[in-house]
Length: 181
Image (cartoon, rainbow, N blue to C red):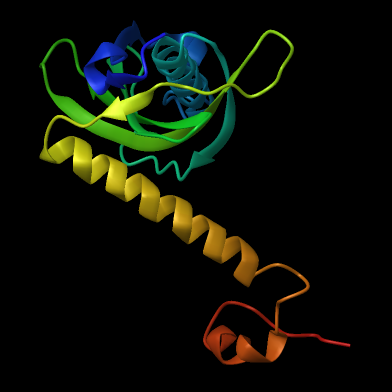
């Protein structure tokens, strides 16, 4: 196995026609279907990079920016943005295309943290990432910052560390009513 790989070596893209069976009660493509496709391509990209079975450890923020219509083509693109020792962040971008007009829409982007596993389920060391351009450095740095921010946020709001009095002022003007015992 290589010690380092480029993002290009594991970059993937899939395109799928959205069918009526993919729709929700509002007639748009169900977000759950899109999440499933995103997880599949993240798995494939991470597995290609690590040459191992991978599992989804976390998904960072999925914002549905534009609805997807039945009959549109949906293209998902995945690329390795960050590598740790056993985990990697896969950036996934979703774009829909109206096949009659050719108009495209960015529907969402998300970041999947994937962990490589051996055949008994233990984490395994993965190849590092060769950064070849400014875009690669930006993506890697953004992943580092996202990781640090999540860790800080988790400890800040941990039950044992949380001080209610520090947040009461923040709640003023919010759509909330306090009924504390």
